[in-house]
Every structure is written in C-alpha cells, then in structure tokens.
Image (cartoon, rainbow, N blue to C red; front, top):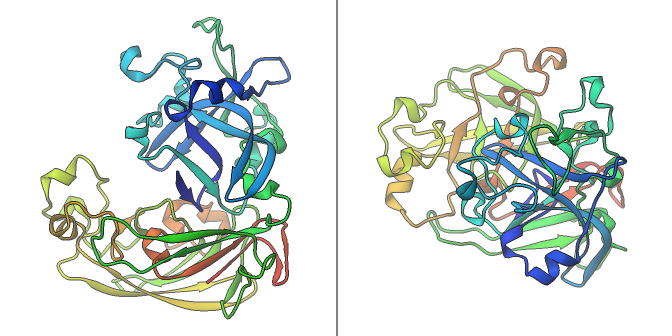
Length: 377
C-alpha cells in the first residue's frame, strides 16, 4: 500500500480484497439513500469507486467506522477491459481526467493511505454543489439500476462522511505522523523506512532538533524561495511535501526538459513529458519558510532523467530526479494572482525524504510543539 503525504484517506483496490472482507464492508449512502461513490483525481489520472465503512487496524493501532474508498469495484463500474474503455457509468466530469487507474497494474499499488495534513479529503465538497465551490468529487449512484437515464450525480457531503485518514481516528497516536526513509544508492530497486504514528505521544516519536514550519490551512502549504537558472527569484507560496510524487516538481524555464532533450524511447511512452534532463547534474538551492518565519535551506541535485533511467533500468529510487511543473510565473507572491497554481508550488517529492525524518502534524491537532498543521524536518 503506497504511503502518500500528499493525499488524504485510505483507498484499496477491489481486486485484492477477499470476497468475505469485501462483503463485510457497509456501503455509505447519501441522504437520498443512494450509494456514495468517489472520483479521486491524482496528478496522472483518476480512480473511481464506492465509499465503504470499515474498521482499520495498522501496527497495533485501530480506528472504527472509517470511510474508505474501494477502487475499481465492478458493482459500480465494469472494468475497462469489459466495458470497451472507460465504463459509461463513470461521469464524464470524472473520466475526462484520464487515464483510469482502477487496477493494481494501472495504479501501481494495492492501495494508498493518504496521511497528509487533512482528516477528510475534500473540505469544499461539504459545500452545496450549486455554490460553484464544490469540485464534484463525490457522487450518488444507483448501484444496480444505473442507466443513461438514471446516472450518477455530484453531491454535497459532510467532511465526516468523506474518505478519512484513519490515523486521525486512532485512540492516542492521532495528531500526526513521522516518515523516516533511509538513504539509498542511486537507482536502487528498493529502500527501507518507517511510518510512525503520533508526534510526542510516545517515547519513540518525540520531535528533537528539527525545524518546525507552521503551514497554511487547510492544505498545509509553506513558502519556498527558489532562484531559477535565469536568475529570477521565484517565491512559491503553495509548496508542499509529497511522498507520492516520484520526483522534485517545480518550475524553471532554463532547465531542459523532455521535449527539448534526446531520451530513451522505452521511457517516452511511460513517463510524463516534463522530466528535467540537463547536460550535467545541477546542484540547486531552495529556501523553505513557514508561517512562523522559520527558515531552512534545502540543497538538492537534478540530473538527466533519461541518462539515469538508462543507467539503472530496473531502479525505482532516484535522489536527483526532477520534472517541470509548468512555466515560470512572476506573480506567485500575490495570492490573488497565483490562485494556488502548480506554477506557484514546489513539490518536494520522494527524493526529498531520503535520509530524513519528516514530521507532519495534522490540521488542528495539538502537539507539544504547537497546533497543526506544520511540517518539521
């Protein structure tokens, strides 16, 4: 199960569940008595499946009555292989975010546990659909009588009924998590690490000499200042830390990316068109600033993605992998113009976590080092 600090809640592939376990889950229903189904949008596609109620136990911790998502449940959409593509039951507003990732192969994991700063995954989904602020991730669907004349429709749903991070419902160690990953050789096929529940709640999860960066509500963003290769100083107020991203994602128009570099054809169809591929490895610097004024520099390297891929064809761990998140935006320092766009964010993905202990305090959670959300490392 993928550990993802950039999303919220537990999601499991239907195909990996035993029939008895799948049957034991209670289907969550809307106020109209229809089944609640979610369209979960990721950066590289979408996943579709019903919201079920489950008891969750992990490493001796337990949470009861947790809304989770069962991805790819055939009762709510036939698999693409039997439906001639995307199932017609999946609303166009969801399926337009292709590709569909509703199988272990297409998703790349048996499931995902989102342990970002939020408890529920969509605060704005609690607003009325007619408000224009609800993004329409949650739907009510007739499970057995679907037809073009009886489709799934977007709904307003309270945060307590949304897919929820089970860690926030643990009895004691529920105020945050610590992600610890060991350093690994470039191109290694695996790495080891520890996911710890709670911050300052046990003898082994105290926060030591780490710098604490208080973050914005609700999504836990901080500000990153990065000097681009053309000398432009970019102030990026929507920056975040995401184990679910496989690289550093940021904007720098002067670093060559896939479309302007020669690359290995075997990766051209499998990877995004945004991999950075400079002629030689770059040593770069970014400075993170929390709402509390705490600052810390981050030194990192960006190599040529396709040289790295070619040198380590079976590798999965790369500490110098980066990709472009868009074109440089000179207005990022103004919230009114930036609007949280990817161009105004620095995504500290998986490479950032290697060799570090990263603390993530949940929104509103009480800890000995203050109230969340905050990031510390």
